[in-house]
Image 1 (cartoon, rainbow over the protein chains, first blue to last red):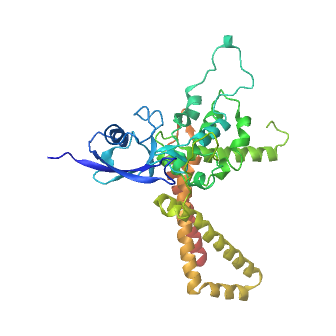
Image 2 (image 1 turned 180 degrees about the horizontal axis):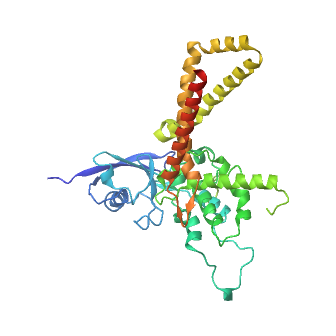
Image 3 (image 1 turned 135 degrees about the vertical axis):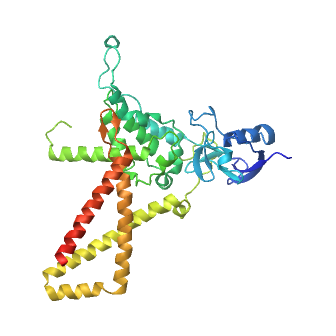
Length: 248
Length: 137
């Protein structure tokens, strides 16, 4: 009996030879325990060594192998062939990003946006080392823990039509990470992040499509983070309006 | 998306097709939710005009109500009602993402927030229904 196979339609794009991406089909062995990334690695090792894609950990931690699988942003290391078999599988680079080659997208826009929200702990004044670490209670940790699970895989950007239509939008992951630090009891950088987060390109560009949270492999819920930031920002605006003499 | 830079290789810049919202059922439902606001806005304008007719006297009000009994207006109101219903359902579901209620160290499960919202909605709707029925009888 011949081994069962599954067909993968993979996007190919060579910047020096192609004017637009094209599709190439490969037939790979079907294995119950294989994920789409295993199939791509099989193609690269056994069929076509020129196929280019990013991957690293193979266990949903590094966030490198995000691609569109049958039109849905997925980590290919977590997308099992058995979810699609016996149907054919379409593998494309993440949408809304420029394509560098084959399945590799240019992530520099995301990296710039990530940096713009200052995703690190900011202190007005660092206390001397001798005074020890900044302590935190479990309840304080719970405030931001969910948003700290982000692995920067950019699936949420591929799922977000607002980012596709308005590339200046800061985007789901970057705002969720800004929220992660704003909610951290050790952080004092709320005001520094304000201009980016509370701008039109920040939270107010979001129309709450909600797909970012649906595709997030780490259940970060960036859509929730953005809506919560909208509430906080609005409350602060009202407070500053009603209590202009209060401490802002 | 970043503009092409001379130090970088050529890249393919994808463009979103105009019919992007037809390509995924969730995007389509999102567009329906956005569209619902148009129908709700038109309904509110009609309702405000109806109230204004009250100020002009019973004859004017009756004439306006008569106009609203035209089949076109009835169909519009049915469509607007369905949109309002859909909008309200999505609104209560969204509330669970926005309202973070903590009990001690743990967050109250979002489905509980949704359940409270729907229950309150049901109770208020029932009270209004009873009031309307009492006033009419």
